[in-house]
Length: 261
Image 1 (cartoon, rainbow, N blue to C red):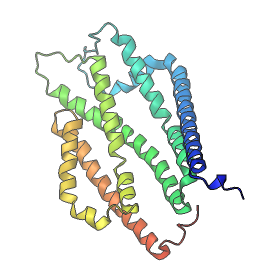
Image 2 (cartoon, rainbow, N blue to C red):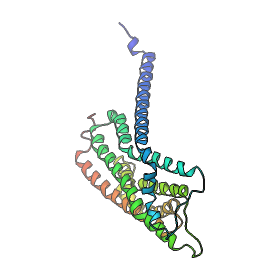
Image 3 (cartoon, rainbow, N blue to C red):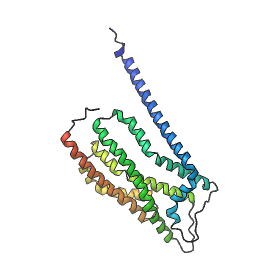
């Protein structure tokens, strides 16, 4: 009788092989993501100045007559569009990045988990892009109109292209992540970490936290802070509503399909 297949050494070797296979799969996913980002960047780099012109339009439209943007660093005229094009490439590749993440974890999920996580991942992409769109079309024009209107009369407004880019990317990222609040709320409720009722009782703290985050991530003016904090609070409420709907669907089925892999 051969007992080697059940030996502890053989079991350990099998686990080691499994870990190596997962690491190889993860490496392949990362390489594919890197390849796609590089490919998109290569295709967009020729239009780097046009992309920067589009992203800087909200502030250029608010500049007084005769004012222009400036570059205080001699390398900024190249590095600012280069940096922006790279971030645009990453943002454009986000659906594929999430698809690779999904293909990596999907084999270990139950059917019920796949049925929930698949639409959540699609929603997370749409919400992230929606947050960037809100920041670009609604927030940036209002912020710069307010800031240029409050400038002293003897000061000529000539914003630096690198500083503007850093501020814009910060706001894009802040609004993109903030719009993921419903996804995070639903995941917390679905996983059983908390319940809609418990989250509802913490609403005052959530509201204070939203305004605190808005203060940290936006320029030091009340308008931009409100334009981030209020959507964050409303998105939190949407997450609670969606969480209640998911909980209501979970009750009839109990753990019925948790055994389906």
